[in-house]
Structure formats: C-alpha cells, structure tokens
Image (tube, rainbow, N blue to C red; front, side):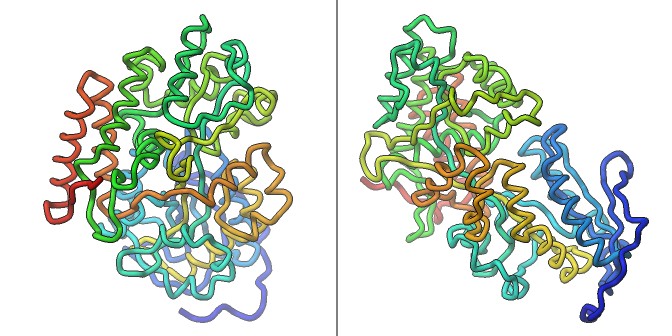
Length: 464
C-alpha cells in the first residue's frame, strides 16, 4: 500500500447519508490505494454490527465517525451493514458474511466471548502489527487486552466497551415488603429470603428474575448462571487456567442449578413461558420494572439506557426508585461479592479488502471524543483510561461510577474457541432444571456434553 499523501484532500460536498436495499447505509469517503478481496470494490469499506430492533445508537456512532473520515477521504465509501437479529442469530449471520470474500465486511463488531471462536474458525486475522502504532492501546485495561489475545499470543481485536453486573431492585417494592432501601445481601440465602418476603407480602410484583434457558442465549450463561457459579468455591468454575482443562463434576455447578430450581419451586420468579420468551428483556425494561411489577433482577450496567428521555419508554424517576446491590458469593465467603465482565470490540476479517484502510477507519471510530459520546449514548462502561477520566463520562449516569468501580474485582469468561458451545451446554442445563430435571441430572448431562465438545483429555474433575 502506498503511504498517505501529505496534503489534506478537499471534502466532496456531495457526501451524504443514504440507504441501499433498505439495509446498508453508505457514506462516500476518499479513495486510498487498496488491495481487492473477492472482486469487491476496493473503494468500499464495509462494517457489520448488531442492531437491536429499531435502536440506532451504534449506527449513529459509526455514521458520525464516517462523516469525519469522509472529510479526509472523499472518494472512499463506508457501507454500514446493520444486522438486526437476536444475540445468537447475530453471531451466526456475522460469521456467514465473513465466510466469503464476496460478502465479508472489512470491520466487524465482535463480542469478546465469540471472538476466539471466530479466530479458530479462520474468520478473523491478527492485527498485532497494527495495534503497535495505535495511540490509545496503553489506555486499554489489561484484562480487556487479554480478552482479544489468541492462544497464539497475537491480538485479534481492539476492545471498546465492557460491562459489569449487579442486582437491580425496586425500592418501592422492597419498602412495601418491609425490606430496607439500602439492601445488600450477604449470601444467596439472603436473596431468596428477600424474594420470599416479597412473595408473602401480598405484593403484585414478581420477586426475582434472572435470565435462564436457551432462548436467552449468552444472557442466560453470563448474567444468570455464571453470576452464581463464580461465587462458589474456586474449584467449581468453568475452566482451570493452570491445567488448561475444562472443569466437570463441580459441586458449585450443581449448587448454582439448585438455586435456579428453588426460584421455580417456590414461585419466586416469572412463569416458565415468560422465561423462555426471547423478548422478555424488553418487557422487563419497559413495563415490569418501571410499573413496579418486579422486585429485583440480576442484570448489566447498561440497562438504564432503556429509561432515558429518547428511549421508547422513558422512566426519569428511575435513579430515585431503583437500588443497586452487589451480587454476593454463595455463602459470603471469598471476596464476598462477584461480578462478570464482558465487552465488545472491533476486529478485521480474513477477507478484508484493505486492512490498513480498515484500521485507519477503526482508529477514527475509537478516538477519545468519539468513544466518550458513544459511551454516553449507549450507556456502557469504557475499557479506556482516557475516556474514564473525562467528567462527561463520569457524570452521564447515576450508576456509571458504581459499575465502573466493579471492574476492579470482575471475572471474565474463558473466551476460548470452545466457550460458545460450552455456554450453550450451560443454557441447556438451566432449561433442563427449569422444566423438571434435578440439578444433579442436569449437571451430569452438562459434564457429558462438555467432554464431547473438548475431548476427554481436555477435562478434569473438580477438586475440593
């Protein structure tokens, strides 16, 4: 590739946002020399991302960066490829796009939990050489860097967002049940006791909710099950880093399933049909919680974006009505509390048209100013020190500082190529318990499935 010209090109005033085929937005940008891939136009830079229903936050973030880029490069075209799909469907559709040089994007928005699986499948290419010159690489949290590092020690993405999880609870539901406004459970039993108190108070509110079952996808594994599992004894977690083997035969796994079973047996949660509704989160955010029909739920740092002035169902009172509590460990031991962190970033597929141009646009997407605005609009936690130090970020939400502080003790999933399949097995174990299986039987089925996935040489029995 030829180096960039030293002079700044005059922007083409014909630049404008337009839509093609009802799906992709195009922004003209200036051409640089590029290498073609799969016969695609080297002057068109495609970026694929997940769009949640009619939400446009990511589209606005990308469009703003593309408009700035267009002022510098008026002959190139940035094509937005929004994939409107549920979480699991997004991963599948994105992988289908990346599998062919003809359809592959040049940049993809990747969840850290699926990234190494996509690396293993050959969809993504390493960008270690490119991040070496990236000005903000050192601003990124080390744990987030690890999440985009492959087993070959090469870098496969630039982290952008992260998240943490806690218990959101409705203070008025708690008050009516005689529970304190500054409630902080010290164990799983404290959570169950609070749920029973709400149930027995005559409240119309469902006491407790956690995502569970296969229709909820990774939400069930991460926001639900792993918030329990990582609060059990250390030997009960999913993967042993030292031995590089997956854990089976875990008492912590069984205990986590038993907690879920208790919720259903004691009628402390929503009915099974609602749990298996893939759109239940929308009902929770727009009606159940705002209308005082839910006492508490385990969920992520971002959910208050559903209640802003521009949201479909604004809830301006939420900072006064909603409380936050750390998720406790099983019996209050260990660190006492637990949270899981994840996050998204940008990666370059194998079939990129021109990786240098793609990375230049990536740098525009992740400039400090752009990411501050994106974090505020998207209500997420940043992985970057420069963004976290900005007062606009620190003050955009009453909850942002609380959730940012949780990062100090957050755990990350074992984002290995096998993890997505292991995660699916977790969801199946949860659903088995929800539909009548014993925790022991569901855990045994999980153990067998994981052994099948990774091979007998790559599992080990949990030890006390």
